[in-house]
Amino acid sequence: RAGKPPRSAVDSGYHKAFWTIFDSHVTTLITAMVLFQFGTGPIKGFAVTLSLGVIINLFTALIGTKSVFDLINSRREVKKLSI
Image (cartoon, rainbow, N blue to C red; front, side, top):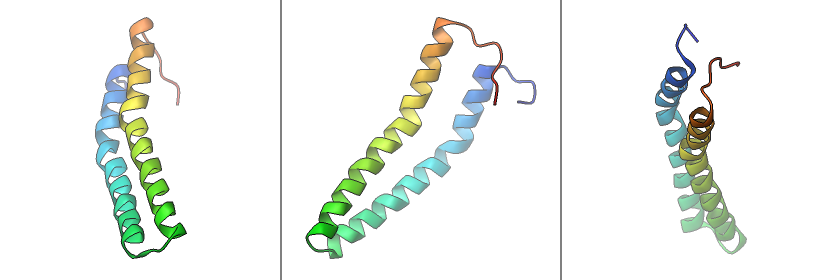
């Protein structure tokens, strides 16, 4: 947007969204730690599963999607980015 080339627009979007994504995932991990600490049986299992899901999602959101865009952009120059 704002006349930026697609590469610059994506970099700007990742830069602006990084801390929001990171903060929401860390908050959820803190909640999972509390559940694990004070929960019993199935609640502890849920906390572990939640933690694994959040960590994998954080990796995918921050690294995976950017890697896919970089791969697409390296194979062919993206001239226009539709939103």
